Image (cartoon, rainbow, N blue to C red; front, side, top):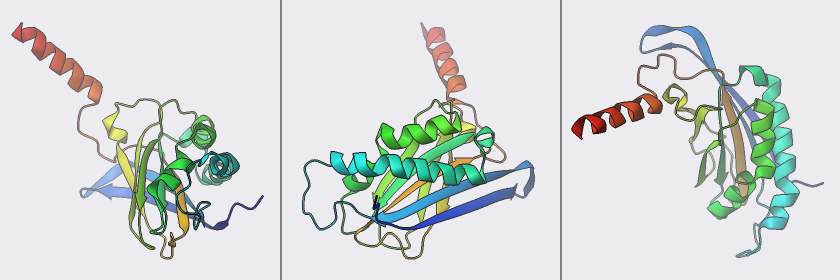
Length: 197
């Protein structure tokens, strides 16, 4: 099946020192980005995006997940996310259509052993734009240490009639996390409210 795929780019970043202090263990982030022809390019406003979603999302999800797991095995993944960046000739909805479907996200979530939703971003950019891909812990959504972001760029993508789709993973959170989880904040707020009664 023709997916319109032009290229796949894989980025690996290891952080060994943060804030002048060495990490107890390096934190690795991996991004896999697929650049493909926007399936709705040149068609004007398309009311029903479903046929394109059904045709492409499962193929992209499976191929990109396989690629990411070759670099970072599922048992190492602690945080994850996804992103879509549409070229300037497309609608943000075109990128969203390809990643905001269980036919894409479930393949990655299940392979990574996650239960949390995949953190995400959708945007429209020119080629070579710096992209930020947010992540959260794959099963503990309030774990702030894993509110992290992978940043990358592809010099020639996305072209005006292309879509860049990405998934990302990290084998840890921020190198030196020192802020409370959302759960602790909630408990403190509830305790303060009770004290005021």
